[in-house]
Length: 395
Length: 166
Image 1 (cartoon, one colour):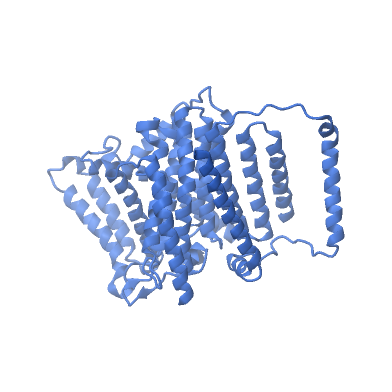
Image 2 (cartoon, chains in turn red, green):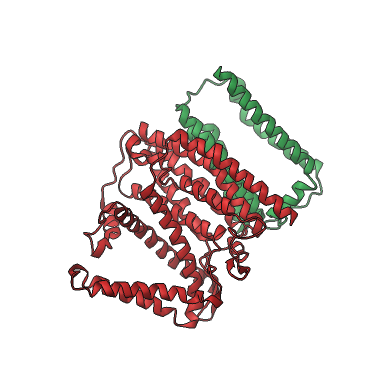
């Protein structure tokens, strides 16, 4: 009974945080892209456009869902459902932090730990392609069909370097459970270098890390590999015929896939919830310092009389940051929150990289995309896997 | 609970399998086959073979069937028209199928009269480690033969594709 209640609470918290992250990730993306392009980004709804995601959600829910007459109705309606289900499924095995004790109950900051967690995520992501392929086919529209075809071809091709790149750090940590993978990366090499798989001996997995990142960009259909929805060629690709919540489902699936992929990068290569510096070097103070610094910047700008528009919003944001920074002053809370902080910080950095790349790189041509996967990424990942297994066998 | 789940997913697998044959549209058939794979994966899970279940989903449902659907979409295959069946198939098909089932069941029972009963969740020796160990020690020869077979198939596919181009 206790177990069920704790699990339900965890489920609620994870779901709420995850959904909010998905909504606000889009705000962050629009803001960052805007600033990269010297624009303002969303700024009308709420201070700094902070209520924009809410407005978007309301708009998408209340919009009329048009089902075009020429579609294959069953698969047309099934496709967004499939896409979003498998995208959301993967979060259930991601560990956010260490074991914690809350009000006398010990629990893991993870929904469930299955001993084939990595494979579970791979399976969920490989099933997700059905959503896109079906959407493209069922729309009965040549642009959608081309988008669906491109997406399936791309997913099949990039699944190979993706899986090979996953396999090589697994050789070092020797387990398939995501929790155990993170635990195997605890500690420091030579007293300062974190024992993450990108640094770990006998063969540091930096190559696998880069290959994995590139493959993840392709698997999540992000620029520079967003050929399935290349708007200059295919209108909107596979979701051309979708509107209202059905369109929102695809959108949510894309962002959920991004978050899962970023978490997977963090867990497999960047040591999950472990800090990048030893405790003796003061890694415990980095988190409060970052939040308090953010608070100071907010107060400085908010109290500047020249910025009349931000008179109230920035001091309030500063108070929130200061409050979060203050939480780390309690030793009992600190131990539970620091791992979560490091996990979120690393995942956030990878997500920022996704957005940054979108603002920087142009799109590939389709034949270049395929050539890159088969002629470059696949051999590199294969060589890396062989070398790693040889060195692991020798040591 | 285990028994209930077993019958539920076994039923799903059988219904999907029948659906593969009954449906006239290739995409519907292919998706039903995905359903069969998924239900089979759940049956593996019930037995306790998590690794095999996940491999089933990744390899069959996630890779091979995606390729099937890709080809169907690429060729834009339409609905198949039902052809008039021969009289033999019409009258003897279903009874013949059940007769075959009975013969198979009888044969298996005769061959393995004292085989241990399958129990849910007891098949624990199918983790990644045990599987790899037995593949590379006990079953090394079959494993290598299969790899060579697959290699020959790949080379054959390339040779055939080359000929088409000339």
